[in-house]
Length: 316
Image (cartoon, rainbow, N blue to C red; front, side, top):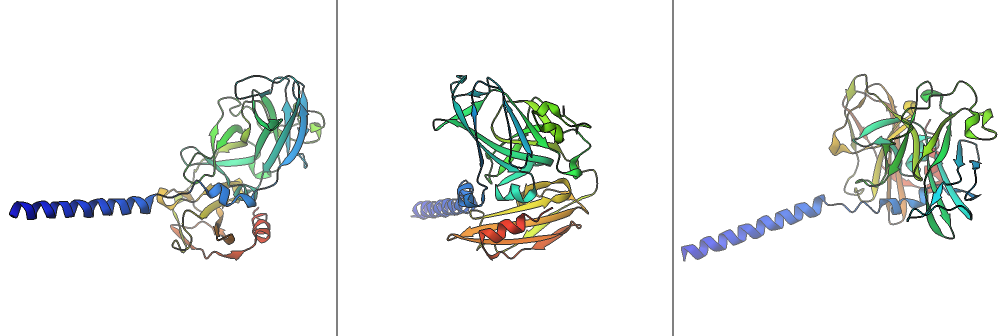
């Protein structure tokens, strides 16, 4: 009888432990891969171009912020077959300001949670007859539009969304590493007409999708922590994103409290919270100067897409 009672107690304890572990697992597993789709209607409509494969062709974005040189062997399919003829559709989205990056769920964060200082980023897609094409090699120029990032060399980075927040993070390219400093003369190598502008230009790009012109930002001063308080029961990780913008370096990083990262004391910041519930957007934005062990209270309120885009467009 005692053995039976002991067995029953052990069984009950095991069931209780399993139940607790299952509950804990359920509480710490988040379905956040869908956030790209959730916030998709905030993204910019791409600029569209048509170029001919197999030819040297240069395109400029609408404001000439970005110039792209396509070479005779730029385009290939998934099987590495190079296209020497045919018309190729190009889609381009530019993200040169912090607000652009937040709306398009892009950051200036590299692998290892390292902060980047940005001179612009883009998303490029190429297709022929409805099928995606990939890059062998092409050239890209980023116009020097931010005086705050001039004076030092920039490097080429490629981006992906393979992370817990499904935001764009970056990995430095193995070519063009800091090979292009701010030119002191107009950059004729970018293509016809570019002699009117200054560009950071990279001539050996090997990937479409997300591409940027950045450099690592070295935290040389005093660092401190930041805490953000908001209603996490109403605004869960599955429907909410928090971004920290550092306008002085044209930077944006996803805010993740569990990482306990450090940030530059005394630097200006803009904190943005975006949430979407039942088809409605909730938003708040707070700005100031980073102080020691700072805590920021955020209260997301119902807001329209139009007003959100207008507010984020003002981050300078």
